[in-house]
Length: 155
Image 1 (cartoon, rainbow, N blue to C red):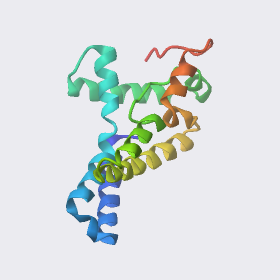
Image 2: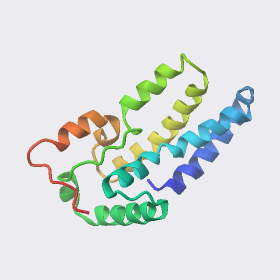
Image 3: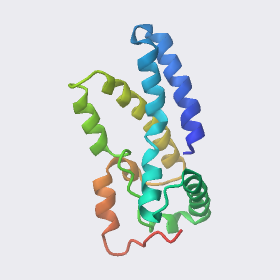
Image 4: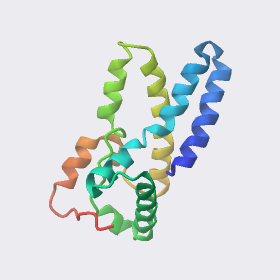
């Protein structure tokens, strides 16, 4: 899902949560909002490491073009491509954030923001008939990428 939709939904959701639970305060509502879209920073990291280019403008252009190319493929052809490993989009990262809740309650609100983000991502995956494991476990996605028959991304 495009970042602009995560920003819009994250803003609405964080304001709604703050309205329903005003005791959390504006700061933690802000943390929910920021976490709901900053999780996509891993897309930029993937671009930077794979392309050896850290220009945010170039990353945004490339990722938008890759998305368009990807969705221009037939569903069967998409399924045969390797998954991009997004380190913040898997249960491995979420478990770490969950453990960090015991260090500081701020991480509870980070986890809520991540949850808002992932609901949108899972909805998009389902709508586009893509497997949920892409975003559930990055370890599994990595393992699947290393199996025979999975094609490297040529986009």
